[in-house]
Image (cartoon, rainbow, N blue to C red):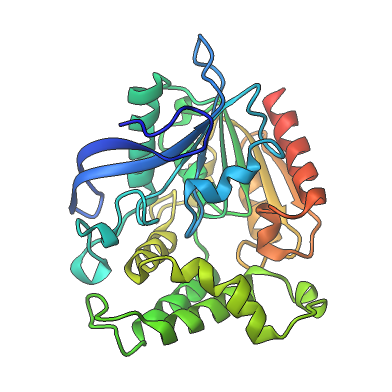
Length: 331
């Protein structure tokens, strides 16, 4: 079902039918919501796929079109992962949480995206997958699951396996929500305002660097109230939990040897770390890049922390990302 013309001004819905997940549960009448910018060329060789990051919807990442990705040259498809509130999510009533045995893995997201590209666009080999944070996780999963399907890979501020330390961060966010008085053990019987505020405080403390907060001019609590809480309050808290569980479960090696799995990637790859990222550390990302044949490793020098990879309001980081992407696409 198409809800818009390919100018990215509105969402499109790709109906998947019933989807069996890796956890053994089935999403009834699953859907994937996406936006398209630019036109697919005659030989279908100019498509860029961008999977969404944590909590993001396609509209939230549309700023990249122009500053980072050229819509005059490329057909850019931003695809929402399961659990983001637009694509199939617990809030739709057709999915549960880990407490009921539901855990979406990135292999599930990749399988849905692959169907979207093949059935809607007629594309079986993707010129570039570009992803930030959880979007980078999905990009890695694509390249390991089906190396021949990916020509180029740009992974920004995200890793191929969620580290133990990063899992602690996700668990703290999950605990913030499930410690709220409205948590029932399987869901919520009211809006978890206390849990959401704690969630926003934790997220704000990690997503930007310590150096960034030194220059904060407004009251800290007001900063979180105005800049962070609205982004998470717009979500059903069950969806926030579902995406956290996907994040924690992420491992392209499925518990096996990560270096060997990364060595199977045949795509021309750019790995981009943020110099002050507290989630996905420069050293961790550099080690993964070393395991990928021919990969180029870049560091975004920025005090924005993790958000350096999603610099919607910062021109220097945008320009740096554009140079990396253009270099990769011209190779």
